[in-house]
Image 1 (tube, rainbow, N blue to C red):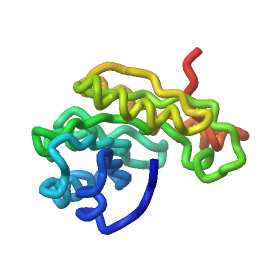
Image 2: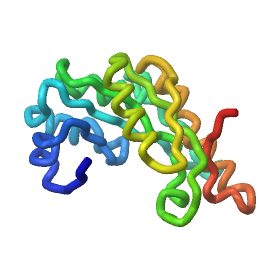
Image 3: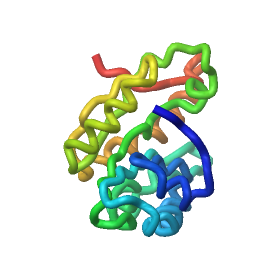
Image 4: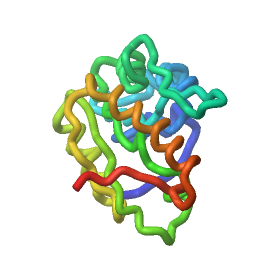
Length: 167
């Protein structure tokens, strides 16, 4: 496996799996900008979560499509499989290469083969366990966990790198 970087459309054209690592409010524009570059059998992975913040904390900002992952699916070409994954990973944990992740990522999608490929990629990250959470229709429940985790982490000492682990 090799990983490299390039301008979005060039990177998308050369990739089997494209991770749209952009804020939710840039997701549709980004997918539309690379749509013509995506191979018919490409897999588009959406980790984005729509959130808003007020004095009480972070809240899930559910889009009219039902989830941010559904927005990605609507913007992607029909031939491209869309998978939701990596929504609830702690930025603090990911930034510290010395910490043991020890967390799960929930994977959703309507194409079982695409979910399997994304799950295999996730399993290749030491300490990250992918779990199948069903179809794309389940993405909103997963995305809604992210603001909850951030609120818990911000309001409790020692939980800045909070993650989810199912036992």
